Image 1 (cartoon, rainbow, N blue to C red):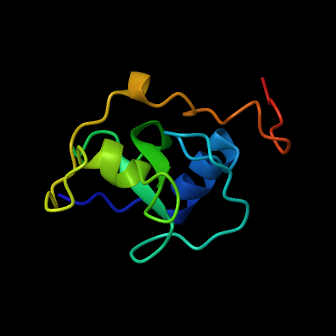
Image 2: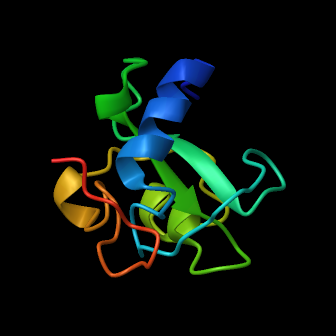
Length: 105
């Protein structure tokens, strides 16, 4: 199952992650997301919840490939997404070491 998130949810996740990959902390600035892109919107749990709490943005092949490594257990033949534990995402709320990071807490 492929969860499609509404644009307002993706915008909220971009804000929460401060435009950083949730897996490795790489900053993306302005980028196009989706198939064939460097960045992927991914569900933590493929149950179908279309909320920001169930959504992360992960980097793709051109970077550290967290989308494949975390989202598909490193298997490029595995088209099924796996359930991702939030504890595996050190940058779920952004990477404080990036110069563009701003804490909103």
